[in-house]
Length: 319
Image (cartoon, rainbow, N blue to C red):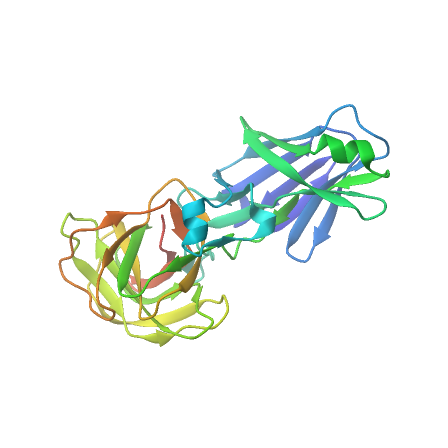
C-alpha cells in the first residue's frame, strides 16, 4: 500500500491510481504515523472534547466498503471466528481488479485494497477503550465511548488504522466432503494452471480446489490435485491436474477438504457462498443441487495462462 500525507489529508493507493483513497481529518489535532502493517491517522485530544464523534471525509476511486459485523450466534456455534480488532471494521475492495499478471503486470492479489481496523482511544496512563466506526455518504466517523472520555487522563489518542490487504478478517470453518464455491470474474480467456487458498487446520488435513462455469448444471472447467494444509493460516498453492480453456466470463471457484473443522480466511461482503455435499476428491461434471450459505469473500484465487501466452494470477471472487 502506498501512503502519503499532506496538510491533514492522507492519500492511500494500491496499484497506482487504480484504487485511490483521499482521507481528510475534519478535526484539529490529527497526525500521521506508520505502523508495521499500514498507517494510523490519529487524533490527539488535549482535553475532554465537546463531542465523542470524530469525522474523516473519504473520497474513493474504485473502492467498495464492506462492513465486518460481529459474528452471529449460529456462526459462533459453527466455530467461525473474527479477529477482535476487526469487529465493526471495514474491508475495502476494488470492484473488478484482482489477480497478478506474471508477464510484467500488476499484482492485484485477491482484490483487497486496504482494511480500516476497529479503532481504540488510549489515555496518557495507557487505559483504553474500543471505538466504533461508521461509514456513510463518504464520511467515516470514529465514535468513542463518552464514559471513557469523561474519566480519561488527558491527552487521549484516537487511532484509526488503515492497512492489511493480504488477509481476510475472519475465519470460516468448513466441513468434510463438501464443495463450497463462489463467483469470480475471468477477465481474459485462458486456462487455469494452479489455485491458491488461505486455508489451514491445526491437526493437519488435505485440500483440493476446482472451477465450474455458472450454467445451471455447472460444468467442470478445472480441478487440482491434492496438497497438505498448513497448521496455521498461510497461502497454499495446488497445481491444476485437469483443465479446459475458459472464455472471459464469470465462473465458480471451489474448495473441498478431507477433514472436518478446516479453517479458511474471509471477509464479509454482499455476495453468497454456495455449497453441496460431495465426497472428497470427486468433482462431478456437471454438478447441480447447491445450497446458499452466508455472504463471504474467501481468500481463494487461481493462476491462469491467458490465451496468447500472457500469464495472470487471477483472484477468484466473489463470495
